[in-house]
Image 1 (cartoon, rainbow, N blue to C red):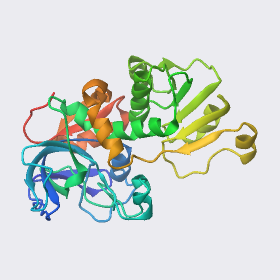
Image 2: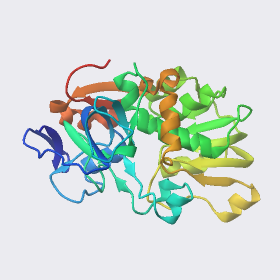
Image 3: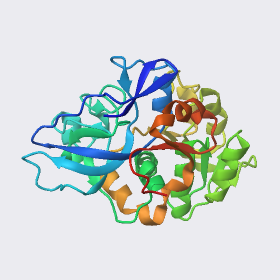
Length: 326
């Protein structure tokens, strides 16, 4: 079986002798058709995050068709096209039982602490393989997982069409937040130094930063610590600041600043199973999150896809198997 595996920081090899996946009674085997790339994949690729072992199968934003089902699976069938929800929560711990599966400490995180999906076939728990609407493009399916992340952040924020929104960063998450806010009737202002990313955000309904203040919601998507403080100072008193981007540094804010301005800080981590993912999937035909995709590569071009992903204005995805998707 062919797979794209990390063999050293900055080096991905496409091999053709990777072992076939086994599967249990509650699993499905998916014949993969495509995988999107995101920042966490690049962190592993560049050596900023260490995988459990080497060589290591990369990727987590995947989709394909079910090739086999376990003996106990009743609601999935061979031939169904599915998109993978790549955070396998235990569904038994206290956080999962309250619905906050995004906080599950026992999650299998595909591509990070459990092998990725950049292979011809993968096995996974059946209820994390979600059927998708007919006619959805490969680009939309490759962007479904990050769209679910952005949509969950907007849901958790409580934003309404009457709010004034600032989006910090126009990487994949920033672009998708702009797309979702625009669908809600909001014209977000976006701050982004990369001119091509800014242009993409504008095409999705955003307005380039013009220095205005008084935002009732600030969505920080960049994970760039120096960007947070000036963005917060442009928020109105009582505003909500949604933190989506990750970084290991302490917040450049004091409790005095937060309390006196009565700010609400809300972190948003991935999405909660199954509602966030299934709802995002129902929106695919209208939302078309694939508009944030810029480049597509074949599996044998995985090294090239990873090496240039951070410099591209839009997302990158890798097609696997038959070329059936636009």
